[in-house]
Length: 120
Image 1: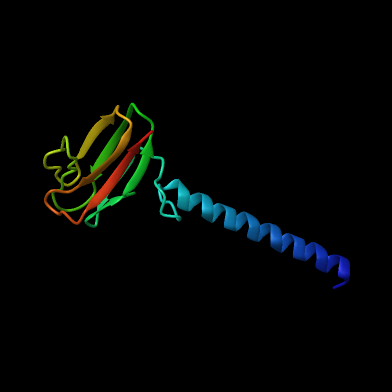
Image 2: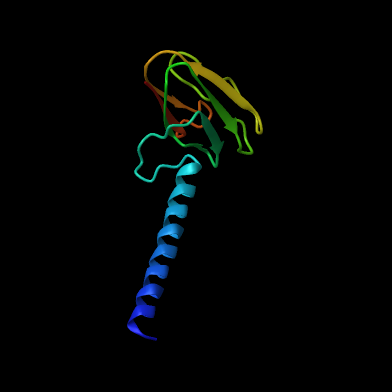
């Protein structure tokens, strides 16, 4: 293989790797995960494996957030001023956040489960 063919082959390998890595980054962010641990901009929270995912979200005022219980047991979404009541497995709770601020929440049945909604 001469030098010109090696350069073309190397360029092809670099392009393939670049596209592969870009695709992996896109997929991991498209499911609501944030690799840096910062709040995620989404309006859906899954309750699964005794945790809220993502556990920190950032939304605009007036946004409705849906909390879906994908776990096998009952949970709650409890804020200081309001709560969901019991959310059975497979059910959801929706709340519209109209006030700007940071709102921490937990499951009143499993207090170690916590999350946060930041409304901008």
